[in-house]
Image (tube, rainbow, N blue to C red; front, side, top):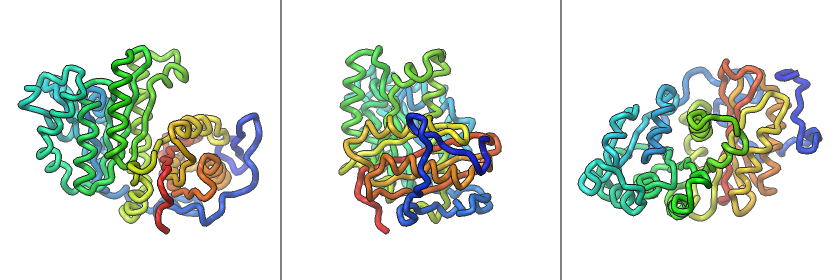
Length: 349
């Protein structure tokens, strides 16, 4: 029965998880995650000097759709070269990129123009990013502003000593080769500057949710982009920030991906699929992971062990995990699992 001490997580092929538990020395916990799975420490999550930045049309649309939940995320920014579109976006702060170059008329689907617009606005970007320690970038790759400006924003954020995490979408195959090439080249540059880059491929929506309308599909993609940000914001405390940053850093020498899934307590097939899809984007077995579970309070120790075991199956033999969770009454009977996978060297002890 979901949520009881007898719940199990069936594995691929109908097999159950083994009774083997990951070695204790390979699992560390965020300060709010108590061993007895009781309520985390009282109080809201910390002010992690966190910024969420939507870049370009796709990124701005994403933060606009998700802005009603922004109180959970920290300071939300919208950056675009299109002044008219920027006026319609809800965000705490907005910045028009390339005021002189683009004159508020957009980048005309040209990533080079988007890049130059961001370079023109570099002083304003550096000023806005002052004091940020953890920066999340949201962008849709394939067009002009998101593809061209996102790597520049990531570079400026890193220069300001912020840990930079990019969540981007890859265009549908039907959108054509030009947008696919734009996305590919942008992704290479973004990975060179961001500490952690995760790609949501829009074609997944066609495979996993074929009956969705375009509007609902875009909302689903936004949910996939924002869920790990929200999870980290709700589970981490200020004391956790150094460990979180150490596990997210280093994408210039490695690779990173994230997996998100919502599953009924007692069944982990959704988590298996999400972890498997994320693993395919990595050149080697990940060395570390941040695993955060959102629960309605009915997560059992067995459920926790099963989630961690599913994670350890995709990690390298010496891989380590940082575990955390948060409570949400709306998740009773289900569990939201967000996993950050990283191929870099093991974080310092």
